[in-house]
Amino acid sequence: MKIGITSDLHTDVTPLNTRILPYIVEAAEKADLDLFILAGDLSPDLLELAKILTAFTESSLQCPKLFVPGNHDIWVIKHPHVTSEQKYRAIAEICRECDFHPLDAEPFVQETVGFCGTIGWYDYSFRRKKYNISTERYASKQLLGSIWNDVRYAKWEGTDSEVAQQFEVKLQGQIDSIKDIVSQIIVTVHHVPFQECVVYRGELSWDFFSAFMGSRRLGEICLEEPLVTHVLFGHTHFPMQQQIADVRAICSPIGYLYESPTQGLLSYAKERLTCFEI
Ligand SMILES: [Fe+2]
Ligand SMILES: [Fe+2]
Image 1: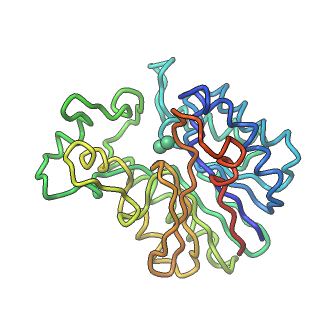
Image 2: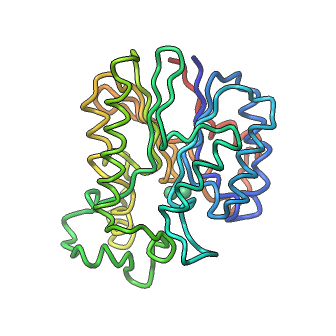
Image 3: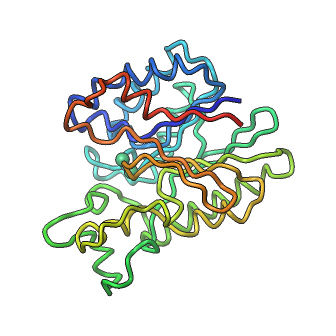
């Protein structure tokens, strides 16, 4: 089974992020995939999100397609009275209508392989303790004039720790619900599941915002289940593949395209569609 993964298309951020979409679709079409996964951060605009999913659905990519939302997808910008929980549920419905399986709503089984997933969230467990910054400061998501935009637009009903825990419990429930009927499990999350995959720079401002990368427990749940062989994620815009104990961790984001990639958009799209066989 050949699986392709990409994430963080952010088609609303720059003109190049808009222009690259057909090239990503083309890369996926040519990859001869048995299953395609989008790991979140397409667009805060639901119409735009639907348009992106539809671009894949209407292509010649006929394999099953799975999606987990990212933090940008659950942002509430235009309709501040709507909660992120409501938007999260609406995204699952849009997925179904666009022939994508909403992986965070329910697991997916193909042959003997199970796929589980969740947006995940952050609980500041990836903060650098040496800076001795208070929980209240992390909760403000602001430091030295910079701001993490989730504080403006992510409108969950709980604290970050509560939200992170809620998604961790859901992931554990998904794994428990299929582990007796599959021989292998692939997990997809949007937020970063392993601290080894968080990029720190040793400078306060950058490292402060690394606290919003993900949660330690998300990765522990994957490592505790022997059937989990791969954990796919997005959110950080650094592509990476790392072996974490018995698990292959893969991140393959498009990221923000402020400048045209030197290799051209199609080659860049091909590079940021990571394919692997199981
Ligand atoms: Fe992103
Ligand atoms: Fe993200």
